Amino acid sequence: MQRDFIWLWVYEIGFAADNSRTLNVDSTAMTLPMSDPTAWATAMNNLGMAPLGIAGQPILPDFDPALGMMTGIPPITPMMPGLGIVPPPIPPDMPVVKEIIHCKSCTLFPPNPNLPPPATRERPPGCKTVFVGGLPENGTEQIIVEVFEQCGEIIAIRKSKKNFCHIRFAEEYMVDKALYLSGYRIRLGSSTDKKDTGRLHVDFAQARDDLYEWECKQRMLAREERHRRRMEEERLRPPSPPPVVHYSDHECSIVAEKLKDDSKFSEAVQTLLTWIERGEVNRRSANNFYSMIQSANSHVRRLVNEKAAHEKDMEEAKEKFKQALSGILIQFEQIVAVYHSASKQKAWDHFTKAQRKNISVWCKQAEEIRNIHNDELMGIRREEEMEMSDDEIEETTETKETEESALVSQAEALKEENDSLRWQLDAYRNEVELLKQEQGKAPREDDPNKEQQLKLLQQALQGMQQHLLKVQEEYKRKEAELEKVKDDKLQVEKMLENLKEKESCATRLCTSSQDSDYPLEKTLNSSPIKSEREALLVGIISTFLHVHPFGASIEYICSYLHRLDNKICTSDVECLMGRLQHTFRQEMTGVGASLEKRWKFCGFEGLKLT
Image 1 (tube, one colour):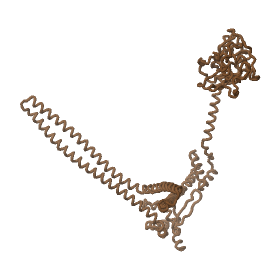
Image 2: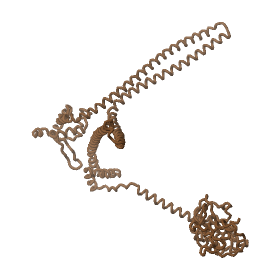
Image 3: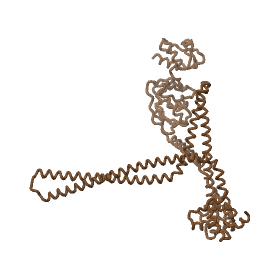
């Protein structure tokens, strides 16, 4: 109680002690004696002032003004009179100490800190208006402005005759500053009249102007977001294709020339496609379009040859990579052998501990890298072997699987038939037992019908038993066949594994003997005609072209050869004729769209030259 009284009294005497360090106070201002100097020092310390006695002497000689507050209590942040500042929001777990606020024509006293904080409604979106209740009856609009202008710029005040008003601020954060004053007791001047006092209640208020401004702001943000997304989409959108010119005779001639050029072919083909899709083909332009389509068709052979060349390059690159990898592996093996020889007792004793550690680490690293490269090389070889033996393995596995599935289905069918016969036999036995029981209970004269029924049942039982025995024998035989097939399958798998191992050994031997066989292959491949079949083809083609002195296209020649053998390939025939330069010659005939490559027989001229 004594400390609370000292607190209020210190605020009433003002802040003159900050400048003079001396305090002249009427002794009648204090109603309680200064019996506890510690409470006085605490109150002065909370205000950030040097603790002074009544006579002006310092109570705490070692006071540091930079500290301001006692240890363990957060710094006081009131709205100091005339400064126009409001503290930042304080965390809820921190005790908040509100202070007295002095204005020109009124004074604000803080609420009891032990009371719960004043309740507030839910904050409306974009709220800039507050409701202020509990105003003094004699309070004027000037006093309201004087109190709340410290929170921020006030745009409008709507005061009611019933001791409340609405205040609209310029920004939203100013509302939070105004809510800080909720719960304060206001007193006009030094009067204690009831009409000059009141308890402020500050709460959020819902105003149409605030909602309209908030909606406008949200719409502006949405427009900015849409604009940003549109710009991002335009940035990521692929560029539109170049415009295609309209069809005309002049443009048609330009496109026809571009179609003959390999570098401009893709652009010209796109233009031709667009013209055809637009419907530019008619009776007048049909010949021009046919010549352009024919020019486009002439590039098919070029593209096929390019693909074959790329595939050949890829195979050569794979072979080079495999050879380089095998060379690297050999070098790794040599390095690891060096490490292992250095780790033997002869040389190992002469190295220091650090040198031994480094050698062991290097050996582990080299072995790991060697194993990785070795796995990679084995994977490449395994892929090649799989590609070579895929067809054979697929055929054998398919046949074995079909045989196995047939045997399994037969065995299952026999098993089901065996079960059904067994159930029927049990049913007949039960019927016979029931008939015997009935005969034992009621002994009557032998009825011929019953005897016939018993005989029939016995015959049926015997037939069922015989049939059951046959089914069981057949089932056992099928099971034996299935076991035999499984054994055969295991043997075939083992044979396949052995074949794979032999193939891998053969590939290794082939790679090692490539260098020695290369000169022999050169001598064998030096002649242009490699087989008897090619010699026959050369004779037939020579006879055909001798009959056609003006030459013939490769398609015409191949159509004639296909009558003799359907397996003849056009590219093989063209390659063979290209190798025999002294026997066959290729010439360009025709003009414009009718331009065509023809082969002619020049064997008699070649004989003179050779």
